[in-house]
Length: 351
Length: 257
Ligand SMILES: Nc1ncnc2c1ncn2[C@@H]1O[C@H](COP(=O)(O)OP(=O)(O)OP(=O)(O)O)[C@@H](O)[C@H]1O
Ligand SMILES: [Mg+2]
Image (cartoon, rainbow over the protein chains, first blue to last red):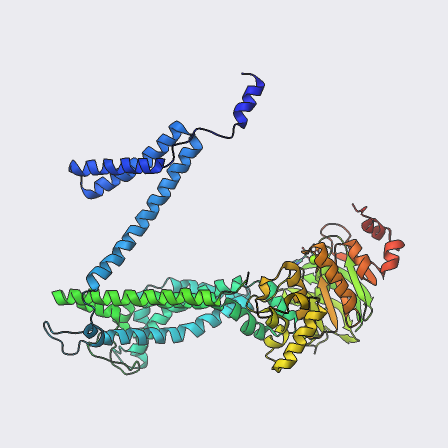
């Protein structure tokens, strides 16, 4: 081979390519193969696996034969990534579908406005009391956690800057993140057993338990948002003769507020579905109870689901799914709020 | 206000960044600092409005007086110093949550000073005119400051700095991110501002120093890892025609090793 020929070969920029729509051809062939397996008596899961494998192997091999090694690798990895994505998403979609399919039938005005007070047999009951309980308990948790969490984060980022106290607090927050939720419940229960009396189960106790779980999340997310505010901006404010505390309250917090609110709402939606700590700290109650400070248990939606399920009656299971749907919608609404707030407060570029 | 510096040494924790600087900056004049990268120009500039100490572990030794008062004296509030000594940074940094209008008024807004609307309008217009930006933005004062071009943002930052009516204006490479036209606009502006403010500017651009400044200070490093020091401080004319120190001449003429 002469020198010029070699360099010609090396500098060639184009190569043979698969026909357009090749992935659809392979896809159809893979589906056909899966269908064939199904007809031959393979289980449906087996057939899907066969189909996916056929695509994952067939497409890169074809690319290797026609194109080149790099393109084959590209196709293999793309296939794997999509498969992984599917594996991750399918259970999620399935779950959403199940909750809606099985819960929707239970939802009616009575279910949303009745409590379970002296409901027996097939009489209509509802989760109004549990819904109110969840809102109250979560509200208390938020009222405790948001100020503490945000102020802790402000101390850590704006004042602590790696001193000993800040390091100790960061460590404790990390430990708190890892507390099993039932331990938080037990702590709140034990605390109020000491303070109020043995066996105290009430709404405020549940709120305290949830706040233990919520504070670390709020601290962490607020810290991340404060870190995103460039030091340039802080210095710009100082250079205008603005004291540090005003810089924080009037410039840093407003700049980061979108992210902070998003983080807080996500933290709320994280604890709103907690069951174990509420089981322990705020207990069961078939009746409406809206006073969080009375020494009487307060029902919440997750605990409602749990109780209904453990009734093991047909009605109980239906109510459990209904409760699950309500909880799900609650969380979805919170997430939606988080998104909207995030975009409303996001710094505007105006371009 | 004049600035007197005597034997200032500047530290980042254990690291001495600048050593034994003494100089006297005349009021209502433009003073330029030049020198190779890392010699401590920004560090020194930031000590003039006590911005240096914002960095954890950073401190200053020596004496720095503004209008005869020691700004590092025991009873001096750094916030009060910064109200008198404004600063424009190398990278434009308008506040992202604020409109152009609010950015100019940021000094008042962040300090929760209440001012009446007509008065506020007057301050904004005066500052924006002073920063040569009024004509470009007068129709969109309510739009976000971040929506301006880089050069406009920098002039917005200058407007923001002069809106609080400081006596001294520190500028750290204010044109380094700008095109020649914006640079020329800012140089013109510096000329105009000179009648009201004492201006100290750091620049890597010799022509700029020659064009805008009355006095020039040349900073240098004795060797890598050594603290920076002031080699020469003289009227700009003399610096660029007949400097006292051969190193200055070498640096200015580009023969710098
Ligand atoms: N925050 C900091 N912490 C520790 N050391 C620093 C810090 N900022 C600057 N220094 C050091 O101080 C010295 C002087 O830095 P400075 O930024 O003042 O240089 P400069 O003359 O402004 O350079 P340039 O022309 O590149 O802007 C350098 O050695 C630098 O590494
Ligand atoms: Mg610098």
